[in-house]
Length: 165
Image 1 (cartoon, rainbow, N blue to C red):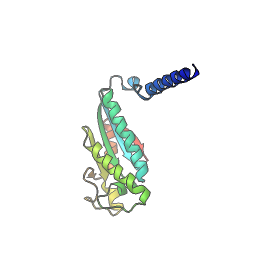
Image 2: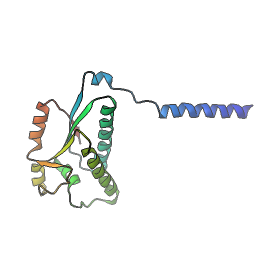
Image 3: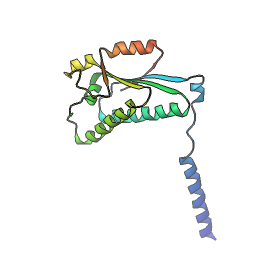
Image 4: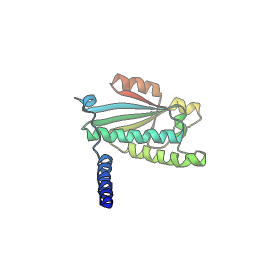
């Protein structure tokens, strides 16, 4: 009898835990009420591959969350400062522990850039200050004159700015 009770409790625990694992994600209905388009600028200054990858994964989930809740994503990534070192088209010499995160971040940048409503910009001033040629960044990112000007323009158009540092 004790063995059957233990088996029953283990089965019940398994059902409860699987229900928790597959529970539907809560909605953001209050924040998204009457919102058709989610306009955001990701102000990317992250300078380490693992930190950039961490935030790119969160942004990818955010994109999916907007879609899940019937909001059209309109996302602009603005790379400036030391973040340009992470999007250079030439091979960058990272420590072995950072190489994998860097490659994964570049792959996720490409995946995100291919999604509807996503575009990416890099600052030519930051590039010049770091001796990066205007064509020296990955093809998924467009070089612009001044990303501070971009931030001013996008904020004037109603975009929220979220720092990625």
